[in-house]
Length: 339
Ligand code: PHE
Image (cartoon, rainbow, N blue to C red):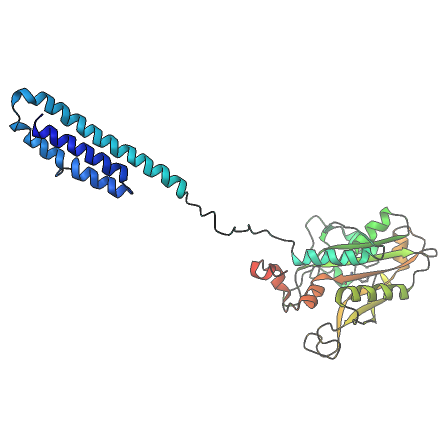
């Protein structure tokens, strides 16, 4: 055995030991540089090959190739081991981190409040109903005893479609639709979106939401209406809230009232929300006009009833102290996720 073969055998043993101990890819790279790299041992031995006597060249060459392969194999094996360990230790996910809950949405505050209103009225025996947002003039105006020259029928106040239909300006047409399709007695609460050609500002929008209440039975009185509104006010704003009715006019109720709640912000003492009056206007109501009952085929001599409307945005503003109604429709999640 010549010196070159001895050196090869020694190098293979050493390289195998180093490969087995390698703790990183960098360690393996160093092994490659030391033995197989351009300035490493094997190229050096290859240069010395010329000094080997011809009869030993064959064996020396064989040992050289076998040694190089053995070192390469030792490095490949070690590399596989390192990578296998790595994939177990680090997968790119730290399972010990606390979980990130996916963001779930929720219903819009106006929808939540509409549901709450319906729930309060349903405790008094009212059934939830809905009607179309795209209405005809008959249901929105004529059947509600609103004559053709009434200002609310003006193009400036109501959205007209080219086919003669309109976007309903109030939820009151639901009264008509319900009475047309049901025999009395009826007791319904109808939430929904309404549309008016208002210039948007802090307290007006081109579309907003109302809840319509309607109760038709024998011997219904204004006192019944007042007690229902009083019950609603207390359920919504607490037991200290008072209500008051003021005479008003609506074409479809007689007598008609507007009703106020005592200011829920200052308790009636006077503040900027109630403009120092101590009262906040909520909406309109009244005893259903006999003409309306006739329009739906109810006998006004037998049946009577009351109707009322509620502005849901107004309730939301009072309940949550929202200074500008437009905040409800800007779709800013920072605002909406508070509800
Ligand atoms: N529809 C009326 C409005 O939009 C409110 C109202 C409803 C008045 C029911 C009387 C009875 O202002």
